Length: 329
Ligand SMILES: [Zn+2]
Image 1 (cartoon, protein in one colour):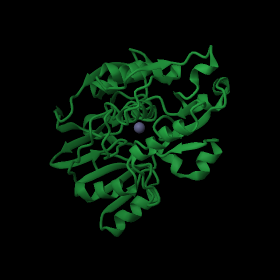
Image 2: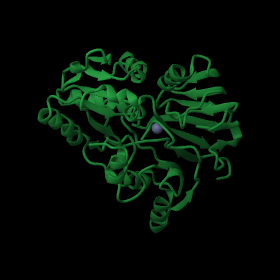
Image 3: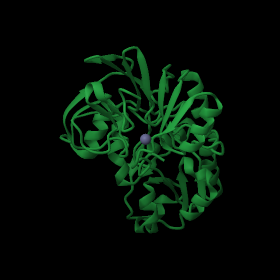
Image 4: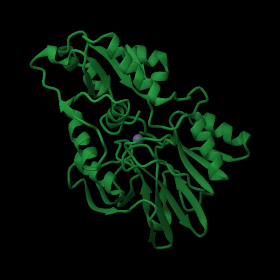
């Protein structure tokens, strides 16, 4: 990789992409906690990612922030940096680095499917693709998200007395689920756990339509009969959820396609809604980029590397640690 090493360090400009520890110069692809860490000296990111970092870690979570707009190129010494939308969550980008005529694109986390809560994914041609592979096994083929959200609405019709508690990660998934419900013309108020409030408010500030939502207040249990309540999966597992009378436990995640996983988390109604590319999206995108080299940062790396070899592409697993710990599943 010559000018980029396996820690996603761009040596000519002394800059890391999504570093796991505080560094002098960091480019941050998106606000999920396994990519955006506090404590860097200089951060280059989109306006939305900068704001999300400040909401989560505080105003001074980096010494300096520099915003780069989508599709605008910033020249740092001899390296050109351009952000392209990654379609993963609000503000998420792929980072294209160009040096001496060579183009290396870092996908960060991405999905190519359309999502009304963020900019849609844009493909980028490159010589080397550094990609995620969270769902990099042929068995992962995410179903249509509208059909999944309809399962939730059907359950509400069947069980109009029962509160529907939906486990969602606070950044990205919560807002996407609300957006998908609104697309199905569900116009009732949607209740949210307090941990989701700041980020939902921020999405609204950025003109993402979420309709009416309200923080839960558990004085009268009956209030929540037949309502949708979104909460982090951790809250659903703990005492907080016991305050609801006879709830149906749902969870929205790409991992819900693994039945065992849903069972283990005591999820009655799994919704397979992912913000990551599935196997087909991953392999189609690799082909589309025309990349000769593919480096896989995290996820099910072996299968993608094997697929690359079968397709005459150099593949290498980087096995970055600390990814997928939180948030963005
Ligand atoms: Zn993510």
